[in-house]
Image (cartoon, rainbow, N blue to C red; front, side, top):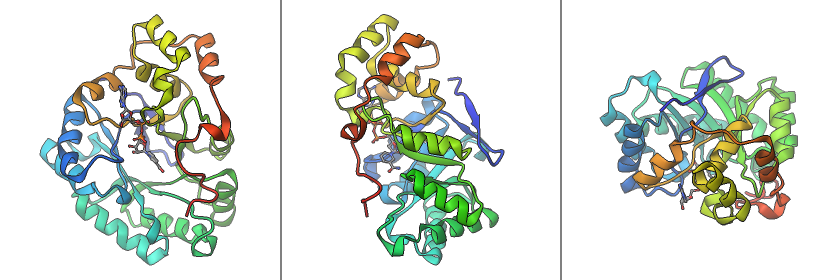
Length: 278
Ligand code: NAD
């Protein structure tokens, strides 16, 4: 598999495609990640909240790949925004993952109405963790434009990525634009709309048939072409292979425009609204 890599604003690079392991049960994670690594995946997106970092670590250890051949992201759990807890939590994650350093550590949710809204102090703690070498890059997730503006204005540290919900029914353009304006890249979570209506949408199905591809492959291709990073989740080896077979076709400008026109705005969200989620 020839996975493109993208350059981040801290001069490191990231594979544009990988595997997300939200909702993969802890006792199945090693098997799923092992399947993915065997199929050529080299980027795993987990989180403290997912409860499966140990399974990711077990698969990495068993695969025996050189450390720089696989990109590993984890995310700060919502209960640990206080700076000293954020630091302790990354130490625990590293132990579970069996690593000395993750590639990317994210604030999972801004929680603007919790902890005095002070995600800025949390962000400063992540910057220190990067200086200490415990993570190569730092970023955020579910940050709205105003949240991004605040951390950059108050710390001068620009996140490498903002991981936000993006799929054709919820293109999330305002958050995407703010992320790109700050020089960060967008990681598009739930790129398959969590297996929902987009996979049977007549526009997506028609475009898929025209290319001899599946609807899932069309959704992923569309996002790669926009420059976003994706890590669809599947527990089935066949679907892991299918989701990775997206580097041998191209969508026309008209097809890209048709997919963009499916945006339902906030009504298309699958997940919570970051402005109120705590
Ligand atoms: P997704 O959009 O990747 O959809 C996954 C679901 O789609 C699967 O459970 C399966 O039902 C279906 N599916 C997978 N491959 C398919 C195929 N080829 N054909 C048909 N159906 C298929 O959903 P997701 O897991 O929510 O998102 C991907 C990753 O994004 C997560 O695993 C996680 O790493 C990340 N994520 C992050 C956040 C966040 O707050 N930062 C939130 C949600 C997800």
